[in-house]
Image 1 (cartoon, rainbow, N blue to C red):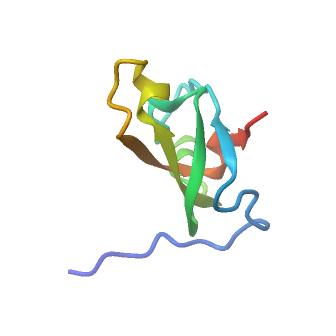
Image 2: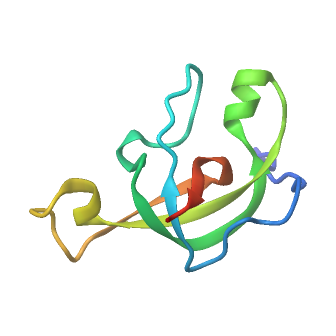
Length: 104
């Protein structure tokens, strides 16, 4: 068996680069999203840029194959789970560009 590719042509240049601080949008769509609730509204750091891929939210909600940039964003464990969380742990998520905005 061979898995198909999910790479897609970008609609424009990547908005974020490695090291950028980003805030995850606090969204609650009625349809599918791959943005975990526990990171919504939190600030993280772009650790990796993984190219442009088909955005699953648009595919499910609208039936369109839209290309969006995909990033690995890392969060401090205490920022997500509070001051009693292990300070040596970080949490990373894969996040599409529409889920993110520059951190103020």
